[in-house]
Length: 429
View 1 (tube, helix red, strand yellow):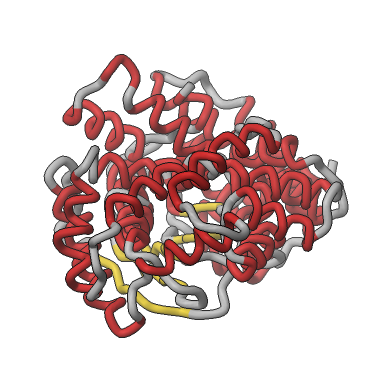
View 2 (tube, one colour):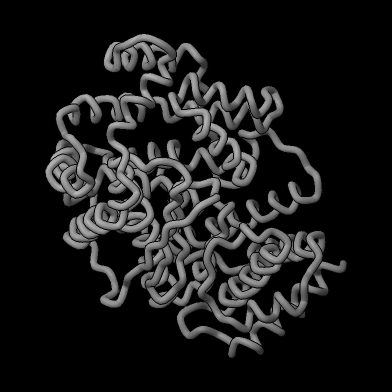
């Protein structure tokens, strides 16, 4: 009974403080969206990493800060909001139905985070299904060993394969005093290629910062009004290939582009206010990370990336390109080891291996240094099953964008449509 009383009161308060209907939407969904924002922002007060971006009405944030709901009260309000959604008129089109389904998925993710915060234990796969709408495949050591054997032959030499691989890659680290120049050139090219196919608002831009002591290598903090803060972690050496990786993933056509398109097409044009908030632990993240990683290949297809890095970035970084061909062959093989990180995270978070065993697995099967492997386990601690979004998300996005043998222009069209819609993993499969 308590939740049924609180929900209508919240709707009245938020409708009054935000000026009523948006003018773009039916009153029912408009009210639902406002209550939804209120609940996500309330959850963010208990979990500082929960709200990744918010550029909606400040009065809703003020209301959340003033009310300061307890976690169990947020859960009660989520239950009431589900009933409100169930009572809405049927959707009038496919996009509107995606919107409703997407909001239901977000509420399931919010309920899951509440349950976890209140002590409920979920398996790695169940957690990822409830938060992101997908679960990664299982791969045993034998799956990775076949790839390791190819890498062993390529790298050559004696001693542990991980040490030999790291030593070979270290030839291609960007000197710290060259980071600015290399990243500026990489991002400019990522942006140029993206703008050939996607129209972005004229005033879009971002600020780039270098930071330390983070569990991630790069992060996009979307600010709204088509502006982002992109941070690059310099705790560990940065390979020359990471400039394009991060430039595309965090910027163009990745996170910055995704958020700008959502703001323009869904929030501004349609008045769908729920998209003015990005809850990190939600189905939106599988699209965000998957498109960010796939966007690298989309922007630099085939040999184009190798040519750009070898001809432009290598000289800027002062690197010798004599072994560049072997380096890129190695990167292609290492990409096939991506799911090794999922296996380490799954077993570590399920409690079947210790942190030190997870570090060793990453060293042995992801061929990373012990320092980078320890950083990865810190990421597991903070973001848990979120790791599936990078590789599984990329595979799902690729399959959707490239289906039916789509050519380059069609791939870009599908990619932009995906980034401009309320699609989730279920809509892509």
